[in-house]
Every structure is written in C-alpha cells, then in structure tokens.
Amino acid sequence: MTSAKGLVLSSIDIALAHRPLIALEAMVAPGTVLTIMGPSGSGKSTLLAYVGGFLDPVFTATGAVTIDGLDLTALPAEERHAGILFQDPLLFPHLSVASNVAFAIPSSVRQRAERRAIAEAVLKDVGLDGFGGRDPATLSGGQKARVALMRVLVARPRLLLLDEPFSKLDMALRDQTRRLVFERARVAGLPVVLVTHDIADAQAAGGQIIEVGMNA
Picture 1: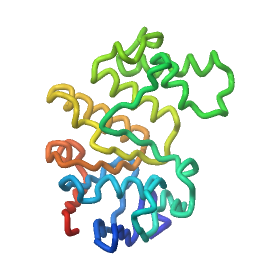
Picture 2: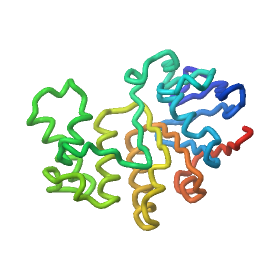
Picture 3: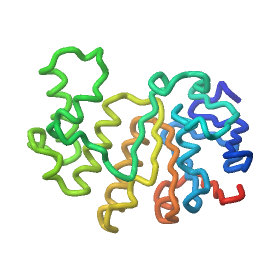
Picture 4: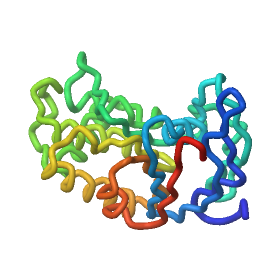
C-alpha cells in the first residue's frame, strides 16, 4: 500500500484527551482531491496538521502518511514539503506582491533577478500581470487568494492541504477560486486534502468525500 503513487493515509487515528476525533484510511491519487467534511471541532484541521507535520502535542495520533512511497510520518514539517492554504491568504504585509511569491521559491534558485522573473511570470499566469510591485493590502480578496496559491505552487510542494481557503470569499469569487486551485493542482499532479463544512466545496472538488463528526 505504501508504494502507491500519490498520498496514502494508513490507519490514521487522532484523539484529544482520549476522545477520538479522526479515524480513517484513504488514498489520494496525483491531481485528485480528498474532501474531509464536518462541523467545527470535528478534527478536520487537526488531520491537516498531522499530515503536514505540525500537530499540536496536546493531541495523540498514530498512523502512517506516505507520498509516492516515501514515509513522511517521522519527518519534520519543513522536510514534508506540504503546501498549505488557509482561510486567510496570510501574505506578508511588509513585502510586495512579487516578493511574497519570490519568498517561497526554492533556495536552489539563487539569483535575485531570476527569482523576481519567476514571481512575475506566475503572477501573469493568473491574471496579475503588473501587480508585482503592489502592496498586498491593495489587493481584492480574490487577488490575494491567487497570490497565496502561486506562492504555494512555486515552492514545488509534494502535496496540497486546503484548510477552508474559500470560506471568506463571496460566492462568485469562491467558485472562480475553487476552479483555479483544483485545476492547478491537477496540472501539477498534486494530491490534495481539502477540509470544509461546505458541500459546494466538496462537489466542486470531485473525488472522495469522508464525513467526520464530533464523535468520529
């Protein structure tokens, strides 16, 4: 099972103070989305933290997380290379839009001019040509979401974790941003885990849906 292509969650069990929160097994093929649905407090974001390697020690967790046969479970978060999008875009306010993107480009790209060119190119690719020098505070919600997505993708992640990243967008922007995120993940061949309480998010994602609850 661990040699499968994509993300494999094997015998995952997460609890808080001996109260079970999450128990699941799943496989997420490259370019597809696994959606975890449930109410607040059901452990959805806790699962992402376990997969990403930053689970709060107040929780207890067991089970293996593998990607393309590589066991991530014992690796620190920075070595798992999980791209993460949260409800808020979390752009650095002291950096320009292009510098926000360039910040995530791997250190193997050393030249400042090359990093800037990559950042400008990916911004143009999502309709933000000429926005590189802007202050992030001047962007709309949808524009900030696009910058956050491209910042994640230029880091060349192994997988993508989505913690309700569409929930603060209005309906029109939410649909547009969902399509962009899922299409980019498909093209990049990234397995995606989405947590949400919105059935429209799950339907837009396609793929497997696992429902969790307070007593899951």
